Length: 236
Image (cartoon, rainbow, N blue to C red; front, side, top):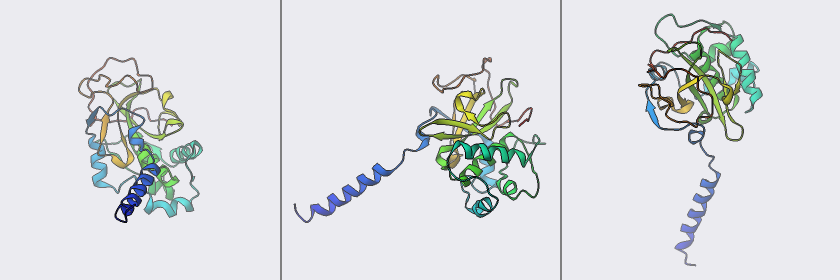
């Protein structure tokens, strides 16, 4: 073997090892990617607040207050329970806005007002603080069975072994995605909130895929305006 070939083979071996060690991104696994759509509330949140996929500024306070650590359903359940105890639920009094409240919730000196989207966003960021990877955490825009035309938001975690789990839902406890019981409209991952994928065509309400893995609500398909989000009947 010539000396000129050896460096090339060493480089090739290093690249092969790197590729083999790289984990699969959750961006490729739980839901189909058929049609992108814009969710204005996410765009405004990204403009007005620090990134919610980063816990570095909060990590010390998070640990000091004894919040859960580790990637497990128990961690998500504990985050969900403590978060809901530290806010009081109130719909937005004006335009629908998404407000990350992790710093206030961790500090626990006051109970801020929050609606469904604030709880979902905050729960997802707290999960990052616990150690969950942002590219496996995300947000789902849904619709409740009792309120046609009114939208809802929940957080989810896509586990490569056990599947998708939803949490930080003001309408229910943490549970398997298959037990969500809400009509799905669009989703994004926490580290890519500028890239939303529609699961129903917002212009017609028609499903874009038949293999999402959860029951669809038996409602007439109608157009949905994703810019007009709301959180009806806020109950933990």
